[in-house]
Image (cartoon, rainbow, N blue to C red; front, side, top):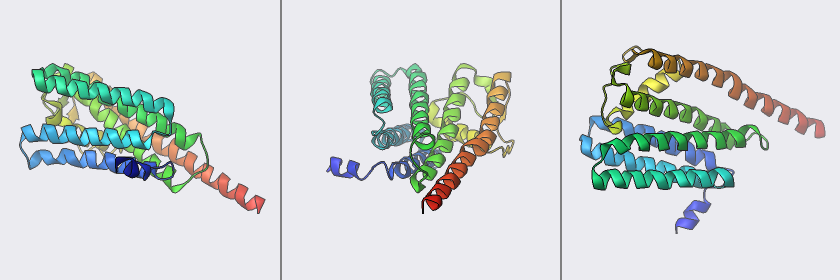
Length: 229
C-alpha cells in the first residue's frame, strides 16, 4: 500500500507534493491560537516529520542528497525521542539545527534539478515556489536558533520552546523575505538586523535571478522547438 502511494510521486509531479507539504507545515504553525501549548508541540513535530517524509519521497530520484537527508531525519527522530523520554529541553537546539540542515539540503537538491537539468515544465515552476518557501523556512529556523542563544534579539518574540515561537518566526521571516515589513516584530540586536536585511536582499535577488532564469529557459526552449519545426 505504502509503495503504491509512494509511486504516485514521480519526477514529473514531485515538486507539487513537496510544495503542498511545506504549505501545510506553515499552516500548522497557526494552530497555536486554538490548541494548548503541549499539544502544539506534538502536532508540529508530526507535521514536521510528515514534511520530511514527503520531501524524501519527492527527492528520492536524487540519490546523493536522498541519503544525506535520510540520515538527517533519522538523527532528528533520535533527538525528538531523547528529549521526550529524558526531558532534556536543551536538545531542541539540536533539532532546530537538523531541521535547518535538512531544509538547506532540500533547497540545494531542488535548485540543481530545476536550473541545471532538462527543460522547463509546470513541475519545475512549482518547484521554484518550493524554493521560495524553503528560503523563508530556513531563515525562520535561523531566527529561532538566534533567539535561543540571544533572547533579546527581537521585539515581539521572547525566548521559549521552538514550537511556541515557530509561527511568529515564520511570519517575520516571510514578511521580511517579501520586503513587506509590517513592523509588529522588530530585530533589536545588530546580528538580528543583519540577518533580517540579508533575507530581504535574498528575497529580491531570488525574484530577479531564479524567476528570470526560468523565463529565459522557457523562451529558449520555445525558440528551439519552433526552429526545429
